[in-house]
Image 1 (cartoon, rainbow, N blue to C red):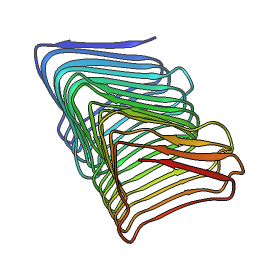
Image 2: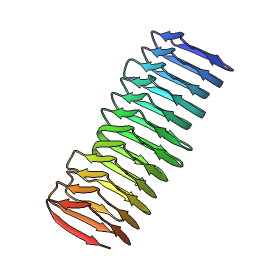
Image 3: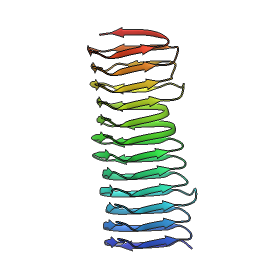
Image 4: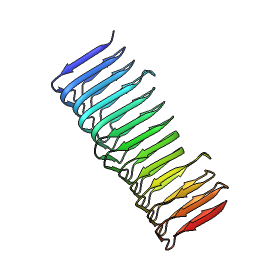
Length: 257
């Protein structure tokens, strides 16, 4: 049957907790899985005050899903993997990821406060990532085989990669210095930035019919904004800086600044 682990705190460093069915782990305090394995052949549900999965392995092997919740910090350090062959949902206070969090179906990652990703957040289906405050994807990858939804007060994709068949980005401030934001599909793209969009040395590329950018300030110095679709690339901004930059489309171009 299903396995259940309940504890005030749990140290599984270099250990193995494996269920041939479902696995539930409820830890009030710290869960340390450094170099350890938490694995279920069925659904895996784990909650903890905080979780350190540096070089650890947390997995659900079938399509029943993986749900991971921490009130405080979740650290998925170098070599750490969190993943499932179904849907994967991660809810945490703060996330520091330099490992891999992935789903064969859909991935949802949400933080109440900061989200720092220098690793990989990816799904074959939809990838939905949201941060209560700042989402930093500097040097990281956020990828979706289908739709990537990314929401934060501040989204920093400096030297990062953000890609999906469809993209929906929402932030007050978007920093894409040396970063790459790519929509591979032809469906609608949504880049909702109300304040500053800084694409210095960055690339925003889409194949969608239309692309609309309506930030208060757009900085595209030595950057590229390209729409390979045949619709309209519309840029409406109070302040535009395009020194050495490129704004190009196969369709109509409408720039108002």
